[in-house]
Length: 142
Image 1: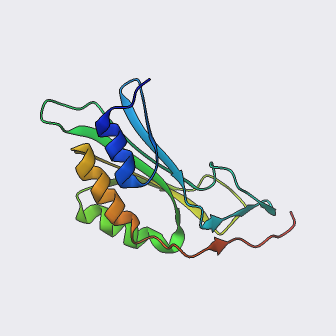
Image 2 (image 1 turned 90 degrees about the horizontal axis):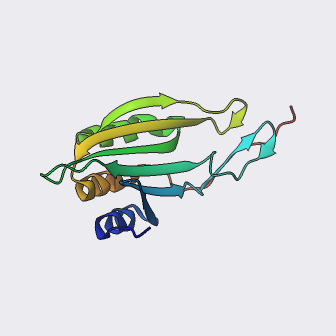
Image 3 (image 1 turned 180 degrees about the vertical axis):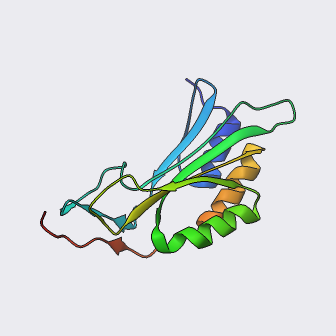
């Protein structure tokens, strides 16, 4: 299925390829600087370090349901939340997925009704507060 130019541009802004299926544009990427250890084993799965951004249901004013999720370190939560809120983006969930993970990984969900490219630019700005240094877990036997 062909990806629309709007969807492709959404992905370009967010720094990853975009796909479109059933009217939903999706961009997926990983935070490769986070190298978690779960149950004492190094994990490389996309499930451990995902970032996903979508838009769908565009109205006649060009506004869509825009949403996102990112893995986030505990020490990044307040800065990232504040930056999203500066852009009027609602944080709808902060939770963990895994037990026995190092570093401790959380997942944040957020959303806004907005023009998709505005949302992408605002999210890109907010992502700028996340660390780019390598963060590794420590292996411990279970």
